[in-house]
Image 1 (cartoon, rainbow, N blue to C red):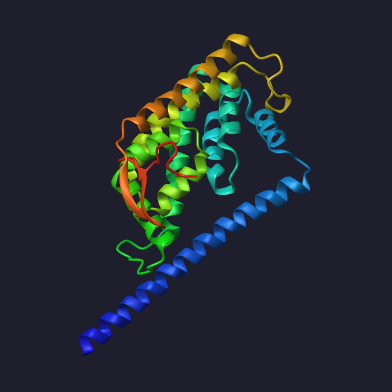
Image 2: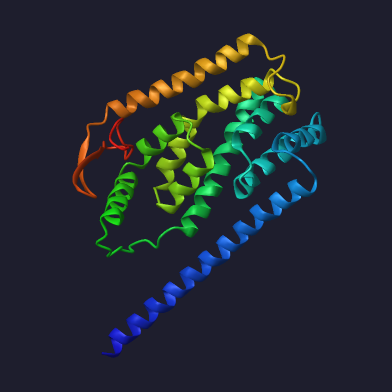
Amino acid sequence: MSTTVLSAEQERRSSTVVWLQRGIVAGIWISAIVSWQIHQSSNGLSTTETAQRFIDTVGGSWWGVFAYVLVYLARPIVLFPASILTIVGGILFGPVVGVLVVVVAANASAMIAYGVGRLLGRTPGAHDESDDDTTSFVRRWSNRMREHSFETVLIMRLLFLPYDLVNYVSGILRLRWLPFLLATALGSFPGTVSFVLLGASIDRVDEGLGGIDPAILVASVVIFVVSLVLARLLRRRQPPTTVTGVTGTTGVTGTTGIPPEGALP
């Protein structure tokens, strides 16, 4: 009897600590986002104007690479667009060095967002006892994504889904970190090259794509299209699997956890 009571008490305390930890992490994260938005609004700056100010500050300096990496690492915390900062990398460092620097910075920032997501995610081993059909469907979907972490993340990266959304969701669902990192590095590479090339062909990020080299633009578009085609081919290679859903049996996914075309409304 005493052993059972002690076990229940320890479980309760452990649960309290976990929720306290989540509350602190969520509070810091939300505060960072709000503070950043207030800073931009109070200075009357758009996202691209903020990026251009950064370029003007670090451009040509010996410490520019270090500053860029640090800013990229902080970027997912305040939800600054990865695409814009990747273009900035092309402007600052050119096509070759730019790709190398952005690959390192982007993958490191992905792991930071993934880590935050894990802190906010479900406790390992926790079970949802709800009999709600929608809850059951989401749980099955999440489990399949965990089982096929590499394929899932690779396809999402090749589809150019929002970078930080994929990072945080992967962490919240507790996808395995190594497959997540490898799939992110591989799947994000085409997009990285495409955006860095765009940046390397323009002088300012706040003036749009005016004056861009047509050859660079074509190359970027080709890389973008190839990435989408690869994602489509990977999805087609996965045989559909039947999963019990809201109204009985619904074919939803292959081994990647990504639904085949037409499987969802």
